[in-house]
Image 1 (cartoon, rainbow, N blue to C red):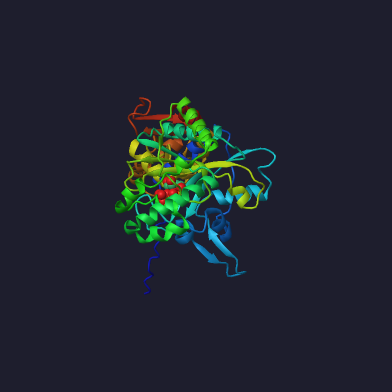
Image 2 (image 1 turned 90 degrees about the vertical axis):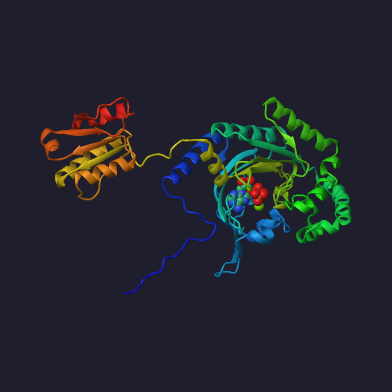
Length: 427
Ligand code: ATP
Ligand code: MG
């Protein structure tokens, strides 16, 4: 006899099974409502894009492009393709391609899987999911503030506390260039404490060196020249405009002058929402302004700002703080006996679904006892029984499975014709 071997799923790519998948659906539904409240509309792009979209958009010298992308050559025509490691580049590509943002500015969102070849651990996966929100064509800082106010509302809706906002401004290209010279001089002076990656980054992307988590480099990073101190009046005014609006909304914020982001396209506003409740991977949401990206990807220059939320981290945080249950399999479980009983149960189930109830009809010819066990396990509020007696009487036996269900008696009889109306009213 041949023994077939199991095929495992990929490391760092998770399955979501019921009931946890129900929490995903609840979160997605809540998020769509929340976004609609601010006029955001859904923009859906393919998972696959040309690799050059990301090398150009995200930047050659970033973690993502250097070592995290799932790229391959299309065997059919030799195109170099990449599974999206983030949404922004694809959204901007799409908006340019369809002339979507020039008649008026646009607020759009995407939600779905992204792919990065990272070392899997809690809060860090190879396929993970983002809620990505982009405001295209707005110079800010009003919209920058709106995005952050919006996020504070989401945390409230989910009952999350202990999540704090860190802000920085990355200024404009000329300010970054002036700062870069001072920063490189500082790094050269402290070259003995730099790790291998920092030494490499020192020439290519020195700002990223400040993002280090290496404890041996913290003093060096803290004493480094701050980009914030190189900002001119216009950049500072933008930053102050944002802070004033956050104050208006009562949102606490801290300047973190070392906050940079792992993607090259940002300027002016950058922010992260961070929590201590998720262990090492505490960043739930990161975002900022990317006024140069649309032009860099071949579009007519237009400002833009956005953010991405990591859904696995958000879900983890939500589940910690709430005792809400994933939805039960059904509200009504139909128990039956005999061929005629099954057929009547199936007919009644359709009538119950007509009035909006969620109904499971037991499948297979098992005894009442095991059917009731299944009914209990399903999380149903009532079991509706159709056996020989019920068929004769033309009335179902209704057994309430939860004592908390609207003070119902344990068991009663309801005529087939009244069942839908009665249960609709009482469940
Ligand atoms: P990190 O510093 O944690 O690597 P990042 O700067 O690479 O984050 P972004 O590119 O800004 O992350 O992505 C936005 C959000 O997506 C992050 O704030 C985080 O919540 C989530 N995220 C990023 N990488 C992963 C991953 N590998 N697995 C799960 N969630 C992730
Ligand atoms: Mg990362």
